[in-house]
Length: 365
Length: 127
Image 1 (cartoon, each protein chain N blue to C red):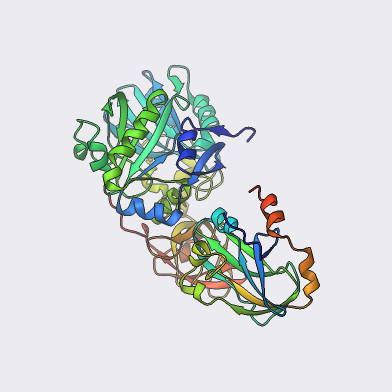
Image 2: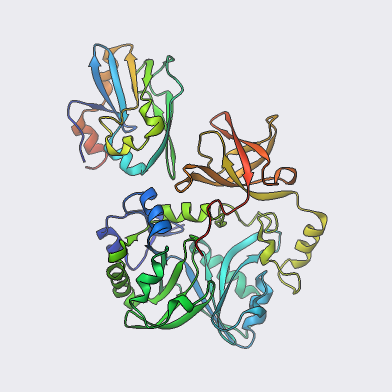
């Protein structure tokens, strides 16, 4: 990473007291007050995240669906106008280029939302399969993305639009006037499991929209939320983070992305993935809850009762909701069943832990 | 931010207060706790051990990060602040008071000469 980029609302975050850190090539607010407080604000009230570092690609043309079907593993043909889908881009060698959201705006018109750290890689990867018919536009620098999440998110946002937000179902979206700004995409998605919306806003009007949301949410004690809490919120839901839990090297099937891998169509590396599935997976990404006191972290070794290594943690933290250590990690398949007792090596000690089903915390969506 | 002038400081963001003879109290600075964020776990398993300066005597875990704690001088770890087992957040709310981490016996008080005074520490962290 050569140069750290700034989000358009940098000055707003600094004025709110944010601690900014470089993340995925951008200077991002990691925390405004306290990770724990911000986390619980989203679980119990409403919080707003500036995640404008994320990338958005607009795809238009007759071959748009075919291209998406070719590069992504989920079946985008089931999408209708206003429907969004979680998916991923498999690479040619058994790993994952990125995970993403696919939005169908209209027939032959789609938006792909990708991770900030992968914008260039994804763009090149998709273009490699674009036989020329599909127009691709990188909207990443023109759009700001705000996630407004929590049980009070809809009540906050409803004050700023006539669109009946409770009718916008989970993983659908609508485009309209919001906070007097036309053409805002309101998407009932998020990375927290707390409910709410993600708003794609033209950069020029982003500050105005942010301020109006803060004002509208004041009665619900809305707070700005940093990337620190975003990570613990997504971990409590067991959502994968690209770069940690899924990478160019990890098998999407072992990562548990089988539910968005549709062998009813052909896509990049689908034959090999099908064969991998048929042969049986060797490892599984599982949820892990610590029984002993301690906090699992990325790259800590997972072992069995005899001390034999059976895997590695890929994401770990103290769960602010559960007040105990939780993690995602890969274990050998024999240890993947919920209830299996395992151990996590923390500073030369073996702490007792248990494989659990995710989400760790009941979702609010 | 406060950096009391009666304390000594280390480059590892710890503070040292001489209590009585060669008994010292050790904690982390207000700057350190604010950089780390919410402290959720403090682990010290070196009580009664003789350690050298700069050896790790414990670990402090925030939500997002884990950091080692380094002994500021040669000596023996006498006591861990057991309150931190249930209330690790005391390190955030009262870093120089109830959020103290260990008491130690310093082998040679001359070791303290190499530690930083509050002005020097403040300069080091750009305050």
